[in-house]
Length: 139
Image 1 (cartoon, rainbow, N blue to C red):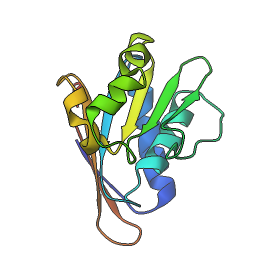
Image 2: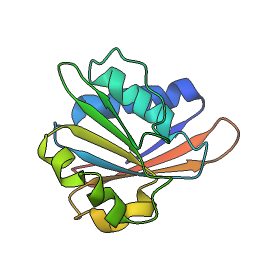
Image 3: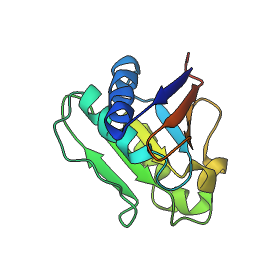
Image 4: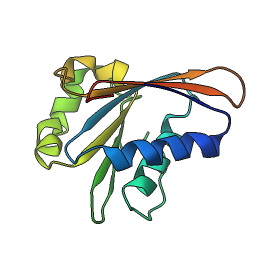
């Protein structure tokens, strides 16, 4: 599935629509350069999951947990050098919780994925336009 958005708000709306369709336990491996819209998409995912929390990038904390009727675990792997570091922080424990996992900078930890994840690629087309390509998980 390919989506073209023309603003940050449209990127958030795409995230909300996406999250409303996915089951708990879905791992979303997100790829794209800095400023490509990954965090905006996750903000929308939280809204689409019925979570009324403030969402921001967990660059320094590695993971933010958003709890409500559903749980969203928001990872930022920018500072990790390998999947080994992800396993060291308890990746398997997070997966066992059955929450939706949104993983920014997945390219840094690609060895942690098994092939069952949904892959979401973000491409900057202009200052405001983004191409979002979603593959796997029935998309």
